[in-house]
Length: 210
Ligand SMILES: O=C(O)CCC(=O)C(=O)O
Ligand SMILES: [Fe+2]
Image 1 (cartoon, rainbow, N blue to C red):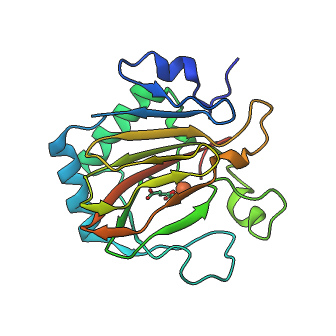
Image 2: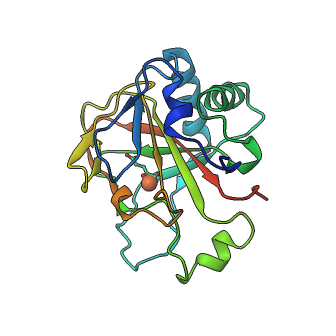
Image 3: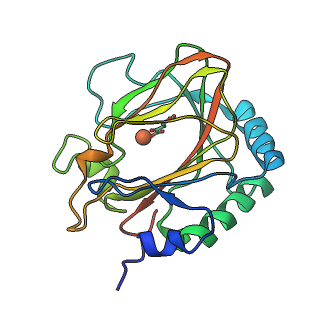
């Protein structure tokens, strides 16, 4: 039986067009045109309105580790509801296990250096971020636009760089089959060289959120 905060290769594979990257150690999936262009533009407009400097958990002292801006999107906004409906149809994860959707914005020179989305078990910030909702299970990320230069997402273990494309979804399982965090999910939101990059990030938890 699948846990309520989980998706799976079988579930994602039920949607036409979902492709799995060919790496045994990492469950990584891509779906082009997951969002239509008009919805991408609406979400970009919302991110523009609500952006603030991004923060990081498990701060490592590098002030340049994550230089982008973040927007906490209003769950009641029609565009956000449409996005959530589409995510649920695709991943079948109980929405109560989802963190609120965020948008990320990267101007030229901004990046999010190599990191994992799961929290270090027993790390300094574990209690603060995981006491109630538990570990992050899956990440669903959507590029809202194509970037003129730079801004790819690099998965070092898989030797793969995914290029931003309007509406393209990227999803991965942050854990291994035995439930332990998967270090092969290490990824880097690379510097934008020309243009502005907008993405949506949606993280899911083992237990209900909040
Ligand atoms: O912007 C990217 O390409 C990656 C974003 C990311 O990894 C994150 O927000 O956790
Ligand atoms: Fe990430």
